[in-house]
Each structure stands twice: as C-alpha cells, then as structure tokens.
Amino acid sequence: MRSAVIWEQYNAAREQLQARIAEKIRRQMSTLVGNMESADLLLVAADGRKLPAHECILRARAPGFYQRHVEATVAAMGRQDGRLREVAIGDIDSSGLEFFIHSVYTEDEMAQFPSQLDEERRDLSRASNRSLAMDESTAELDFHRRGADDRSPEEETPTTGRPPLGDILASGVSYFQILQ
Image 1 (cartoon, helix red, strand yellow):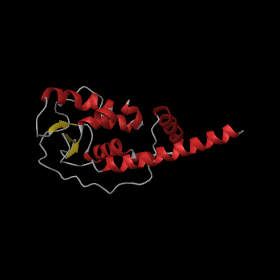
Image 2 (tube, rainbow, N blue to C red):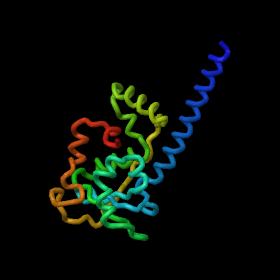
Image 3 (spheres, rainbow, N blue to C red):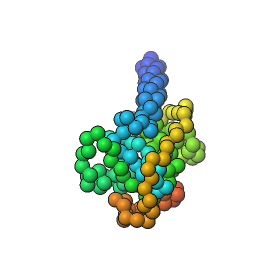
Image 4 (cartoon, helix red, strand yellow):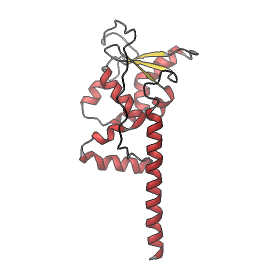
C-alpha cells in the first residue's frame, strides 16, 4: 500500500516537472520563430514570402519535411558562411508555411486538434516521452515580404516530384505523420 502511494507521488511530481520543462522549452523555442539573426535558412513560400528558419530545428523536429523540401537544396548549395540559404517551398502558401514553422518550433497547434485526436496525441507523447501540454500561445508573428522572386509554384524547384505539402495537409494527414 505504501509503495503505491509513493509511486503515485513520484508520477505526479514527474508529470509536473515534465510540464514545467515543456513550457520553458516552448517559450524559448518561440523566441526563435522568425528570428533572422540566428536563422540559416529562408523558406520561400508559393506566394514568394520568405520565412526565416533553422536547419537543425527542421532536421530534428520535422525530419519528413526536411527530407522532402530542404535537404536536396541545402546539399546542392553547401555551407554559405554568414549568408542565408533560400529554399523554395513552392507548394504551400506563406500562411500555411508560417503556421507549420510555428508548430514545429512550439507545438502550439496541438490545442487546435479535435478531441478525438487528443488521445492519439497523448499516446504519441507518451511513446516519445515528450510533454505536449502547451496552453499559452505566443504573440502573433509578422513576417515581412522581402524581395519575392517571380517564380511560379509550377516551375521546377528542389521539391518537384514530391507530393505537395499543401496537398498532404489538405488530405487530413496529421502534423505528426508529416514529421515521421
């Protein structure tokens, strides 16, 4: 009996600690969203808007997206000291890309999922041992359009031949399935 009480106390303390750590990480990660100073990539949306991003974060937190849309361009460009590398994401508009990047960095979109998916999310969270309890949204980000080029989304880009991200998102595939 005594060990059951201790186990419950341990689990409660562990969950509280995980929630506090997750919140702190979320706040810190939200400061990186749109941060031009530390970014090493500029993701160019279908409408030409450019969103700053961090290669290491995309690689770690959105490996499927990174492999489909970023990896080939980055490999072809190589390292460019002090310069942002532009990566065309020609199959999704800037608002969708902005939402996706914000979600990758902070996981804030989780509050917007229907309750049916909440159980799936919790199972994924438990399996990955990450807390997804994020209930505070960050300030709305204002990304400014800078030198949008005149390419159309149909022109050849490093993502040609891959399923368009916009189509994937529209098909109802969850954010976590994209990341896998």
